[in-house]
Length: 355
Image (tube, rainbow, N blue to C red; front, top):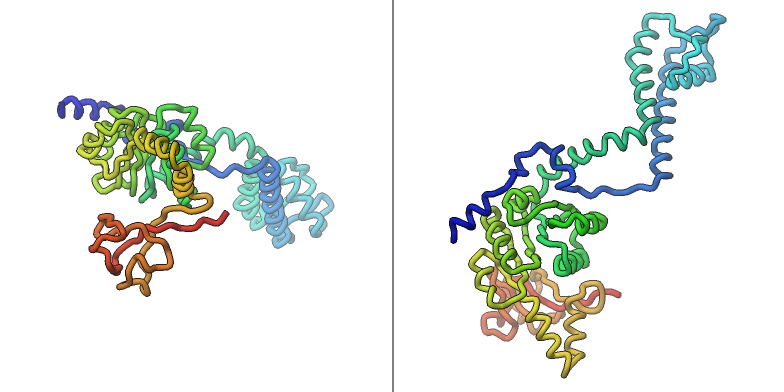
């Protein structure tokens, strides 16, 4: 069994060994979108700046230029010469005649002329270089990505998990979505999330998502067997990451635990309990939904202990404390172990969210 699993895990096309330009379309880094008017205005401003710089250079060295009537250049003449020179019109009525002026023209005016032309055709160049820019962004992202969250699957569970994280203030660029459906990845990318197209059962896909440097990995696969295999793969390449997995059937919980999951959520049973409670005490379900929704009302949160709270009882703090995380283990309020709060504890409490 272990041999077959290992063989399946090893079958990949080694995405991580591909050059960055070959990953365009597989790994997608979000970018800020600007309006056409703003893009055009920016290019016009850059072109005018280049023109002003050319005018300044010509004006400073105006003694080295003469027109067809052998007159010295005025400021207007400098503006005229810079304009026709950068636009490559070149009427020839004004020209540099001293060696220094010609050298400056070669070293400064000519590069400005090339830069000016590049700005004028910026829209075309932008389309032609989109792939190169994306490859550069992929290279930079892979070099610097650390302590992010990888979400496997962008179905209902994956989207809800991401919405909860965004509601808690997590930056979209710190979340990487892995899925085999390109359509749902487009939806994820529209929210500013980094996306990877591929099967998370392959170790190289997870490595491409930076799972080896991730702080947490959320497994929200549609099938329990897929969740087990993904968890096994993720734990192999990310031994220190916190792995949270969702499954449909509770009988598979031990498989997820053995595969390396730190937390397992049984989605079907959780929904079933809420349905049962709703028949007798619907207000309890309403309150549970409120606690699980970070945007408004109340929310369950975790924070560090403040200095003036050390030594006090967690039941007598200003916040409603539900439990204390001590040495990585959750202890519920009321247990003799947490009669007093210690310095390195973290408090699980109910936080009021502004509407």
